[in-house]
Length: 358
Image (cartoon, rainbow, N blue to C red; front, side):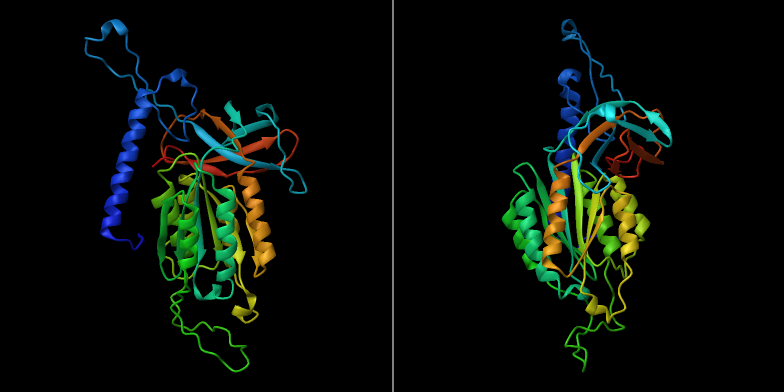
């Protein structure tokens, strides 16, 4: 299984922080009264205890109640793609494996904290669009992140690297993006009649796109709670990953992460033959509740795409239910949200029971 190339000191620090965070969640879950009204995270199994004040000197027992709550963030659009606001839970029905479920809560959670992974392809095919991606991506981070949000930056080429760990500091994130350089593992000759452009050679080890998505989901987002999203700036072409597209999709679904793909490419790089990664990118985005936006090498299209994503992330509905199938057996469950007005629902297609908080 591929891993990030990070220092031993960093691994120890991240491990320690993860352990502390998990311990804090456990204590908070046991201490919080059930009357608090707080909504559990997807797949979270809160513990509660009942104690008679008169028995304060007696040994106490803790009653742990396992509650499997499935939580979904989604957008609603009309036939023209415009977002539909101000709907209520009575406007929707939700189904798991074809069985209708009872909606436990429903809110337009546009202000819940967001954890965002910015993933930028720095392989040779991106040499003519990388500067554009860094500029517009940096502006997007400044636009979308609030004081309670956090993000990280990963770049991927012949391997995947964590350029900036979780932070709320937009300047650090922008600096991380600006530090990304092309690393294709190819030679870049200039050939007569080729316009001086880069020409991939047979020795190119490729672009580990699927590995990068898996690592971002499994290593970075799986332990986080609340709203989670990844934005991929890439041409969608994978070459050299150890994992398959299905592994990347499964990891993203288990992490409850929405994946947006911005297809950025200069078709001239491919000698007019085009590139074939769009199909897999559509599978990845549609099955996680995101979408693919093809921007080519156009600055204005990329900016417009980021604006659309920002609007969608601020316009999400949040729906939750307790499944009629209570088994936490790790099996995949198909989800479907239906609008009674026949609006289009943009949501993930399923989840793995009992694995969303692993």
